[in-house]
Image 1: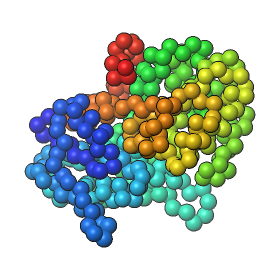
Image 2 (image 1 turned 60 degrees about the vertical axis):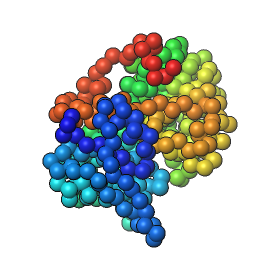
Image 3 (image 1 turned 180 degrees about the vertical axis):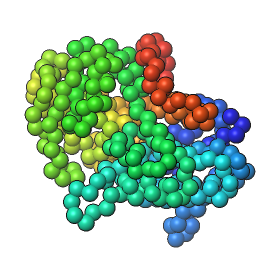
Image 4 (image 1 turned 30 degrees about the vertical axis):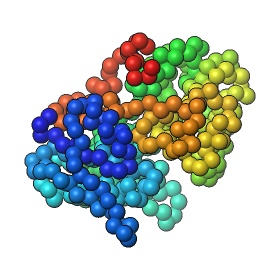
Length: 325
């Protein structure tokens, strides 16, 4: 561990501090500043020659500023002769622009991958990509973590009976099936059509939710349109309590008000990005930490150990989940 250095950008310093505390490696000295004209400036005030460097920086709002800061961090570490540079990106911005589905549009997720590699990143550690195939946009190793151990342990501790796990669209079925197996529930699927960036249509429901508790699984919440339409459809079909688990809390203005008006008992998110003030003040929103999961992954990468073993552990008993008390 003496050859490991961990640095944090400005996007989510509390998460970086929690990771640092979990693995017992202090955050490195690397202040981030802004010039009067708005340009970002990064300086690493430690000797990192020959070190295994991890840079923690989600590319959440403001996306462009945080992405540029991450690129500058990587470039600074590369020019300081770091042995290996791992970009720890809890939330990978531009992930929804992963294909050319109409003429004359960019594949932005691929462009971001190119920039990270060109800046000098040797490895990527990220959480719950919007499209798993984004891993193939890189020519360097990508470790893709999912929050399944954290969410599944939390909902197992609640002891929900007669549970149905619902995928809000066809693309999320595989992950919803994993949760249904972990929580010993049934599986249901909603046929969703996206009409615009903020408007969706929830169509047919495949599966049974009548007189059952429901857990909706998704990778992120932004406008809340998908979740609200899904919750309304499920409630109309006779569901009891409706819970939501979404990895990235990308709440835009107005989304919390919209979600509070929907028939949802609780919304569980992680700390891949900071919560907005509105979300933090909402008693329906519960934030769980991925610091332990990310910290364990960082240690395994440093020691050249398997990352997949993190997901082979059995769910802990409710009395062992002290971090949720």
